[in-house]
Length: 218
Length: 415
Image 1 (cartoon, rainbow over the protein chains, first blue to last red):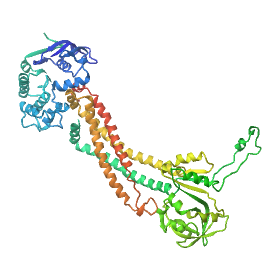
Image 2 (cartoon, each protein chain N blue to C red):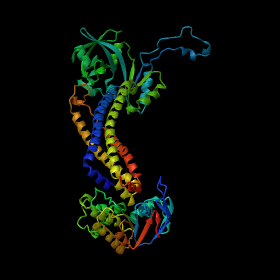
Image 3 (tube, rainbow over the protein chains, first blue to last red):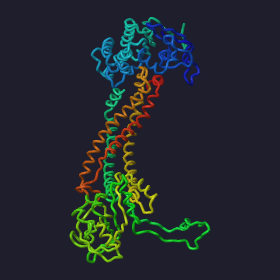
C-alpha cells in the first residue's frame, strides 16, 4: 500500500507549488489513472510517490514505512525489486537488443539468467514474439514502448508507474498499451498508476484521480 | 556493468579504435624509448661500475688550514701572523695493511685489488702520449673489474705479475702507432723510462679509458715509480654495487684516506642520466596525456548522449556507483587493451632497434648492435602509465555521470 500525506512540491524559482497538500492512499492491486491538464501536477505526483523525486514537504509511506526513513541502498533495492517504470519516451538502450533491454533490472539483481524465460514470455505477452533479438532501431515506436513495458515487469514488481505511456503513440498503439495494463493488473495483480491526457484511456482504469492546479479534485 | 560498458564501446568502433591507437602508440613509444635509453644507461653504468672499482681508496688529499693549531692546548690565545697554506697530501696509502685486514674481514666486500695508479708518458719512437698506468696483480684485478670481457687481443692474465708486460687501450695503441708484441717506453717523469712489451689490447668502448689507460703488473709499476712496496690505491668490489655510497661514507668516518664510491666519481654521468630520464618520461607521458584527453573528451560526450540511459538505469535501482562504473569500465578496457597491445608493439620495436648496427664502440654492445634494455620494470611502468592515464581521464566524466539524478534528466527531457 502507498500512502501520501500532505505532499507538496515547489520547484526552485517557482512561486506556486506544483503539488499542494495532496493526501492519497493506493491499495495494492489497484488500477489507477492520473488525469488533469498540462501543469496540473500529475507527473510530479507520480514521481513523488514512485521514489524518483523528493517532496518539499509531506510524506510518502510504503506499507506504513516513511520513505524518508529508508536508507538509500534500500531505496535502490525497492526500485529494483518492487517498482517498475514506463516513461513517455521509451528510453530503451540502443546498444542492447529487445530482450537485453527487458533483462536490465534482472541483471542488476544478478537474476538475468534465471529470468530469461520470463523475459521471453513477457515479450510474447506484449505481442513481440520473434522480435527478441532486434535492436530498438529495428522496432516501431509502439513496439519499443511495449518492450519498455516488458522491461518494467521483468522483476514482477508490486507497483507499475507509467508517465504518459501512450503520449507518443497513435491511438491504435495507445489502445494496445492500455489493454496490456488492464490485462497485467487483472492477471498479475500488479498495482498500476498511469498518467494520461486521454479521457478514453483514463476511463479504462478502475479509479481515476484528477488533479487541478496541484490539488486533488474531489 | 561490464556487459553494458562493452556494448557501448563496441557500438562506437571508430572512436574506440582511435583512443586505443593513442594509448597503444603512447605505450609502445614509452617502451621503445625507455628500452633504448635504459639500454645505453645500463651499458654505461655496467662499464662504470664493473670496469672500475665500486669504491676507490686512494692516498689522502688535504689542504692546510688556519684551524690546524686548534688541537694545541691554549690555541685560543695563539694567532697566525701568516696563515699556513699548501697541501699535506700523500702519494701513497699510509697503512695499507690495516685496509687489507679490514677488507678481508668485511662480509660485504667481494674482492679488492691493491694498485699503483700513476700519470705517465708513453713513447714509441718520436711519438709521445700522456696517460696513466694501473699497476695491479692480475688475479685480484680480474676479480674487481670485468676487464677480461673487454680484451680485444690476448688475455689479461698475459700481463703476469712481473716482466714488464703491458695491456694497452686500443685507441692509445693506435695513437702511438704501435701494435701487439712491440715495445712502449713508459716514464713517470721522475724516473728513467722503462720498456714494456704489449701483450694484450682492451677496448671498453669508452674513449676516455681506451685512449689513456694501460695495465701493468703491480711490481713493475712500483719499480717504475722507484718506490717498491708502495701502493696508491685500493680498488674495492662490493657484492652489491648500490651499497657503495653508504659503505664509502661509513669508511670516511674512520680514515684520512680518500674514499670515492663510484656514485661520486660518476656523479656528472649520473646527472646526465637523470636529465635523460626526465626528458624520456616527459615525452612519453605527453603522448599518453594526449590519449588521456581523447578518452576524457569521448566519455564526456558519451555521458551527455547517454543521459536517458542513466535515468532509466537509476529508475531500475542502479546505484550512482554503478553508473560511475559503467563509464569508468570503458576507460579501463581501453587502457588495458591499448596498454597490452602497446607493450607487445614496444617489445617488437625494441627487438628491431636491438638489431640495428652502429659504429663500433659507440652505444654498441656485443656485435656492434644497439644496446636495448628489456627490463621488466619498463613494461610494468608503461602499463601502469597507460592504466593510470585511462583511469584519470575517465574518472571525471564517470563521476559526473554518477551524480546525475534521474528526475533532473527526465525533467530536462533527457537532454
